[in-house]
Image 1 (cartoon, rainbow, N blue to C red):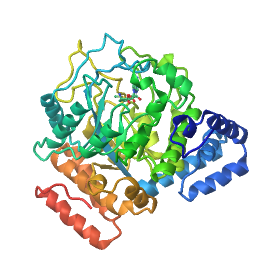
Image 2: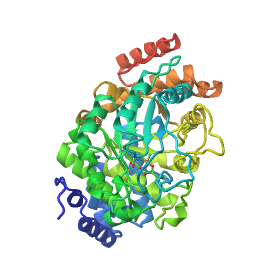
Image 3: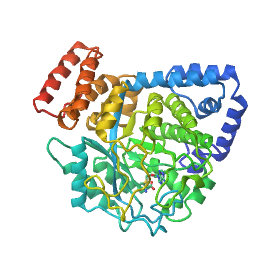
Length: 472
Ligand code: SAM
């Protein structure tokens, strides 16, 4: 029985409710009056319910799809301006006891090289990441209570935050590790993590169980209820995600929004981010073996519909996607992307040898961070290395209410410019720095408050003199 406030996975992600939603969407996909009403509601920028958003996703009328895209673009501009936040993944260990059939870290894979970084190796990796210009990391690890216990993760977070190299610093560590206990989430919170990210992979319970045949991750309810435990442990920024390609995308889309509605209903705050990865080729994984792969066109439509359904939730696209797809999709509502990523355990400090590869999946966008930064700026975006919100305590419902009221932009735009300036001073190539400095000059004009503009200008020259880490 569907109940968004229930604490039971099978009730807040109720299978029948999803099937009825898909049926409703299918019946109404050409219902122009209803679609117009839903688009009008979406224009109020307060989001949509999963049934409404599912109708838009199912819609096949080209002129309405155009309207959906235009609205997604407009909402992105209104909530996020032209900023794109940059981050990199850092793989700590690929030891894993699970049997996920899409992931090369599955236990039975004897072919992949197993690695676990020591604290000294983490320090080297972090130094290399700082030297690229990164300030924000997402740490990743397989699930292995013996090899990667929570104490190892906590110690690694401490190491990451402690490394200082030249002007470098990692200022926000997001964590993507397996579902765990309230007690462990509390420890992660105390370690100062940013967002706790956990991909649902699929909301379809029967498929989930087939795709996760063995190991602790095979427990659908424990995995699906993880965000509630994380929130109970005091983590108020959580990141959802679906691995597109495993199940029917319309099913996943409805499930994702129902999960967001559940978090909002129970905890008063929705997800901080939503990630939209697609299954990629990897060591012993062929994405063609999964029947539900989606085209680039559908992928973009999903992004646009997420943007208008949950306007206040950040959206993340990784280097699983190539430059062409990222070009299309960032316009439609993506707020964070990774750049210069390695999905191997180690590999930032020195490349892995050919005969000892540990990557989780093939990266499609192989450009350096400098190239990604330059590309964003030539497309009119401000690459942002900002980590201010969480360091100023603007998390959870504080972040959400600021974001919903549109106020977040009064801090974010200046912070983006100042962190970009740091990047240009410390890490950029000459060509990137020239483009960036011209962009900052132009963007200063868009700070409406004269006092704020003056402070930002002073701080920008402070950065040129060697000062760092200003924030609003
Ligand atoms: N072990 C943790 C867990 O189970 O949630 C951490 C996750 S793993 C390091 C990060 C994510 O990579 C997974 O949640 C999954 O969605 C994604 N992933 C796994 N195999 C993939 C593949 N072949 N292509 C693309 N993404 C993949």
